[in-house]
Amino acid sequence: MTRQPDPGTRSVTVLARVSDGRAPELRKALREAGTPFAHVPGVHFARLVVVEHPVTQTRPAVWGWKARLLDLIVHGGRGSRPDDFPHPYLLLTATVDGPQERFFAGIRALGPEADAIWDHCTGYPGSERAEAFVRYFADRSLRAGYTFAGAPDGTVAELRDAVRLRRRLAGLAADGADGRVPALTSSGRPAAPARAEGESPLPLGDIQGMVLRGYGHHLAATHLFLRFTEVAGARAWLGAVAPRITSAADVQERPNRALHLGLSHAGLAAVGVTRDELDRFPQEFRAGMAVREPELSPGRGTDPWNGFFADPGSVHAVLMVSAATPQILGAVVRELRAGVTASGGTEVAGEHHGERLLAAGGDRRAFIEHFGFADGLSTPLVEGYHRGSREELLPPGEFVLKLRDVDGDIAGRDLPDELACHGSYLVYRKLEQDVGAFRETVGAVADHFAGGAGDAGAALVGRRRDGGTLDLCPRASHVRRANPLDTLPGGRKLSRRHMMLRRGIPYGPYLPEGAPDDGRERGLLFLAVVGDIRRQFEFVQSEWMADGNVFGRGGEQDVFTTAGGPHARILVEGETPVHVPIPRPLVTCRGGEYFLLPGLAALRALAARR
Image (cartoon, rainbow, N blue to C red; front, side, top):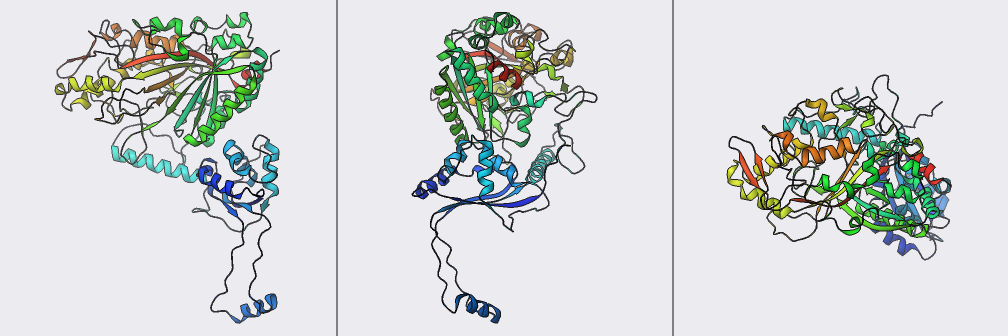
């Protein structure tokens, strides 16, 4: 029988003794910690305070006779005499949903953040020891008869869902847009992810979380690129990190951090995968992105690649960390780096850091990329996880191996089950954006558009800056090349065969509007999750982005992927067609690789090989 979660709201009070002489350090740690409990699920209210002295009690000026009699009996008419505590204590008081043990487990998920605070207390076991951690807090809990809750009949999740739903409905009414709104249950809460009728539920616990979720509430990410130097040490490191990888089942509560791992073909070889198993992977994955780049970026190849990507095959793995705040991210990355250093078989070959860019102004939080356009739109929906019509949903095999894809086939049918089951492919590309060149380009043709440079940029992208659709979307704009919809023979049925789940994040500082080009590096860490590298990513990149024939544009290339040079130009349709010169590339690929995102069981099996 499955035990149902306790929906009740209760208070939790914990009193932990502070080690002698550590109170000043602890106060400093609390100031630097900010609000760590903001990301622990189910918390209404939480506060930490160091207590060293009792609060002095003062007698009221006016007493009733019963109070005077009680004071006489207890104190004998003497004034109150506070006793100093023998040691300082750290007081935690909180109001939470469900049993206190679940709250303690949520604190443990803070990892290094929790350690930075409670390491100052006596007997603290550390966040790595799950049972000892929860027992430490349970043993120091006190009964309390109060709660801090604005709505005692609603859980935190219900309140947050209600606020989020209210904002989305208000935004829909204000915009007058016809965008898709999630299905609602009778209680007014967003409906849970649906399963197709008669379909088995997706194995969420075995799929890496980033495959099905984009972590829109995570504001920063760090990608560590690793090289395996010794098989046994590398496997030991894999075994240590595997339990920490975030699964799709872990993302239901909006975690404050997420960890994912991808392995290249060279990386699989470096940890001892057999030649027979390696040869069963598709040719594009075996070759690696560097070998494929001349077709993906015609006329450029890997000449612009730099850093650790300039040495093909040298990157064996990518460890991707994302978090709700830069502070959480930094603590996790430091811990992971220490684990890599201590492994003896793994080393860091390079690192990329990304942060989401917030659009200026407006009441709703919206993210943009460096050219100033809304980002993270038009993500495909996965059958068995999201809701939608049959036309909107894509079979899970488009993104998860060993499940049925859009052709009714089993994705990765010929791959070794132990390595590929419930895994996905990750396409990773570092795309540098020349913001100065983009602004010069649209400024040079601004007079040809009613809305000036803004309309010129929208015509090239295929959307307005706020993400809104255009009345007439140019057929060869970037958005339409990525997803032609009904503009090509075969219509949406054709487009469905080439969709990707994009999980990218910008890197580098934003260049404010009107500011001179500062020469600093900025761009997009492009991540795409697919079930077939060639049919999805490579087809779109080589057939739709790098070639204009299918759109009636001959050799004209997409302006945001491969176009650019002394004679390059883009034809933009409109009432008066306009040729837009592209004197230098707006986007340049600086490196990339294909990775396998193993299922969690496959990752554990790989680490346990002997």
